Amino acid sequence: MSEKQPTDTQPSFVGGHPVLDFANTIAWRTDTTRRVDRVPGGATDWRRWAVMAGLLDPAPDHALPSTERELADLLDLRGALEAVLDAFADGTPPPAPAWETLRRAILRAREAAALPRALPLRWEPGARGLTDLRHALALRAEELLGGDGLSRVRRCAGPGCGWFFLDRTRGGTRRWCSSGDCGNRDRARRHYARTHHQA
Ligand SMILES: [Zn+2]
Image (cartoon, rainbow, N blue to C red; front, side, top):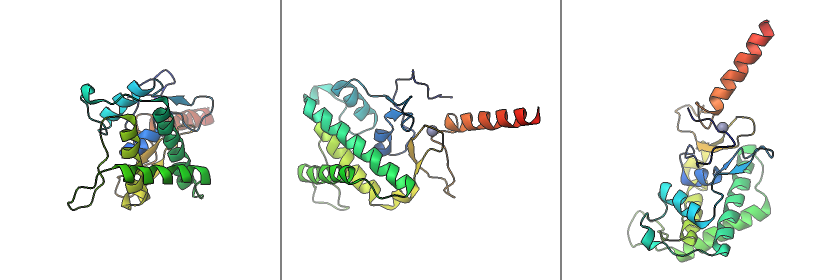
């Protein structure tokens, strides 16, 4: 069982999609007192995350050096995706600044990516540096937010959790980022309420 404690430092991949896992690199997203970045260490940590997510080339000798600006742009995209996905989960229009950040990120990614002359049509970002990572995430975001997968995007019902995931259940009934985490806490909460009510 993996409990989502503030002391945990490992990023989680419960989202089922790299764009959702990217937003989920912040744990306890919707609880301002517990919110914590699981990839806090800059370019090296982000490279490691991206390799785990399958978005960058694992060979370290192929890595491009990263600038502060590239890191800032990557974190801007994460903030924009958080806002857009939260708005989607809440059924409200996405905030204009977040939308603009996302729109620009997608346009820049398309401009930079290769488009091999083959079908099905697919943009191919580079796989070596933080800018490649941002482009890859922007293109995957376009694909997720514009495709059939969007109807399966959910936000965990756990108080303060805020993690997103793709609900692949047949009936679309998944409520928790993880049944062993927020689902467990909910069961414990309900058990506590029940037993204390009876006492
Ligand atoms: Zn959760």
